Length: 435
Image 1 (cartoon, one colour):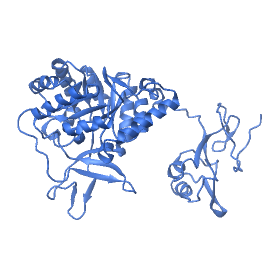
Image 2: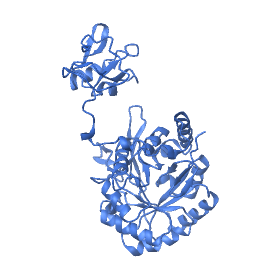
Image 3: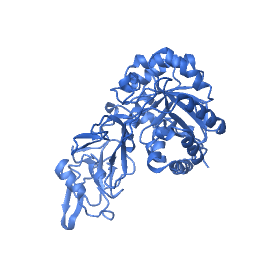
Image 4: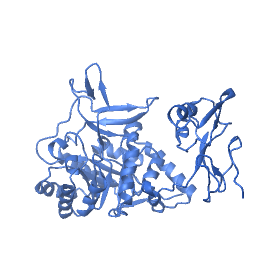
């Protein structure tokens, strides 16, 4: 069996699945249940400074985006950092870490952007015995209006400055959580490591309004007839998060630096994708809020089985494996030629491929008698739209053009070597080049 034990910044956990700083990690009761369910680590919900209490809304805190089957695709969250007393949180963190020494426990922190505020809270957090801290530079709502959260994460100079304070007044690993609400994610990552951060985590939530109530004329979730922007998370943000993780992993300045990935991770496959893109572990929130803490068991078993099938004995064997294959558009092979192929045995004759191609693409699919659909290689540019809209997985595939075959779109003989090409048996326009 594959060993899922993970060491991130010298912090060992039995698997790479951590709960992200969020409502599920707001108190001792939740965190104990999470550990018992199998989570390898937890990032405790963001602590604030001593002083006036944080007051959350008592109306709806979440808005949602659903798929056609009402599967939850995204959450909009307007909840602030913990509204529980700082001392209560610190006492609970101390007890939990003592009782679960083999699990990772990181404390998220957000205080005003001045040295004294950080200097005051860091020794109290260190005294809990927690394994490290995560600096919340990403919260896009509420706290940002007070000069914290994404208001700091959007200014690289502030990121460097605060990170340096934390490294000065705290002896354990410092993780900087980055906001996606920025043009180039590489700049805040570079700034974090310039301040000697041990790692970055990303992405935090995306600024969003998920829906509008057309009767009350107010954004949802609605509080007494009014709404506000919030933080967007869940499966829908995964593509954005994957790209940002990849950008940091392949940037010459930050390449090889530790990354904790966050953003729409729901299955073991999601986790594996982030890890081959350079993440040393992953943090999960929305999946736990949707399915409960035991969803981690499916993640653990799935990742373990995949590793066994691939011959990986530890997670270190594949972390970053896909990074060299992420390139700029200009570095793609423009001599690569492929064409769509329809498996007639699998086709259910729904016509979605034909409609999409005929109306919005390259008119490269014929509809013949009895609704038989065939590809016109002369017009096919391998855009992949037919594959994406087909409801039957594997029914339509893209296959490489063989060396010596004529690309009917250009009329040129393909010179480059391509393996495993099979001539389309139903393509009357395919031409075998003369030897």
